Amino acid sequence: QFNQSQVSEFILLGLISSQNTQFLLFALFSVTYVITVLGNLLIVVTVFYTPYLNTPMYFLLGNLSFVDMTLASFATPKMILNLVKKHKTISFAGCFTQIFLLHFLGGVEMVLLVSMSYDRYVAICKPLHYTAIMNKRVCILLVVTSWFSGLLHSGLQIPFVVNLPFCGPNVVDSIFCDLPLVTKLACIDTYVVQIVIVANSGMISLSCFFILLISYSLILITIRSHSSVGQSKARSTLTAHITVVILFFGPCIFIYIWPFSNHSVDKFLAVFYTIVTPILNPIIYTLRNKEMKAAMKKLWGSFVSSRQD
Image (tube, rainbow, N blue to C red):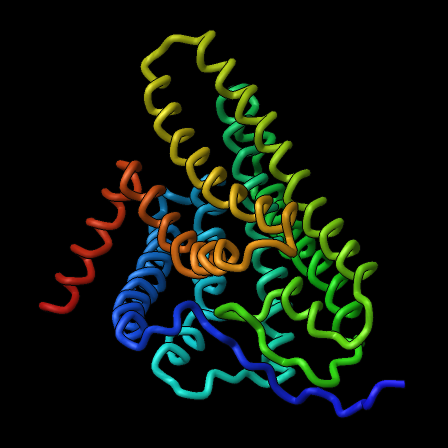
């Protein structure tokens, strides 16, 4: 029988123990976080307020930016504060909220990336039927499906772990609470729970990844067989999409296929997810996109002129 003194908080060890490095990271992460939120917010506002960006591709991109903004915000502010705090603790409820949001938003982002690849597939492989297939209802359905899938993915895993007995060990060797690390702190053998977690996360990651691989392969084959002016534009859009997909799924599949292994690698991948990925999307999608840049300039111009009036 366990001594059921329930753990009320967890201690997050963070990234590095050196004090000087922590202050350097505090400055670096703070700046990155602000840029991430502003960059993604700018994309959301631009897509929402620019009539000619009222297309399925930009509608999905606006949603992706919103997800990135929230994905960057669920753990990063707490992590930035912990870099300069002596006691790096998080409450039991706070810890499981982080786990829930990580899997919820991660799931939403994966299915959104699949939706975006479907949109590009229809645009390039079935251009004559594009407006008929990708109508407003389909776009909204894709976004709702993304949010529902994220909720399902997260909702199926959390109950397994929340109800485990935590009666002593409470040190999480990372920058935020993640399922594999917290599961290991329970006072019973959690082998079965760990298998369920890996199966669930692995299934959504790998299935989305394979669908993306297939759809982008079909698109690339189509582009090669049609040499035209639109080819270079299509190719640059695709390069952006494929870069984001590889950067998002690579680490994710790595964490969950080798889940209970090397923690120093896991820590850097955790930083990658909460800090690097959310800033990459605005950079990759907007810097390679003339329409988006033009729309942002126009929006900025109208904002400046309205301030001068």
